[in-house]
Length: 118
Image (tube, rainbow, N blue to C red; front, side, top):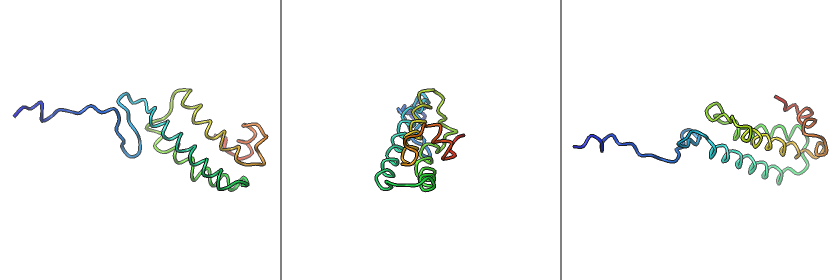
């Protein structure tokens, strides 16, 4: 029996473990992209079904339906590049525009009004 055949490891491009997509270089680019797309998809559903929502409704929907996709296991795949951080920030920027009353305000003013500043 050839010991090399018994203990050989297969090289894979990526693997998914507990919902986190690990690529062979541990860059998490595919994972981040997947989570961003899912968050935008959920925002689209919210926009389509809740046309005129107040701030309270928005906060409930945003924190319960959008944030979990972006924040899930973020300690493992924590975005460290400025590009990744900007892409994730765009989700919140677009989401805050869903509140009709705040649509014409600046992004910073929307964050302050909705109490979403970190």
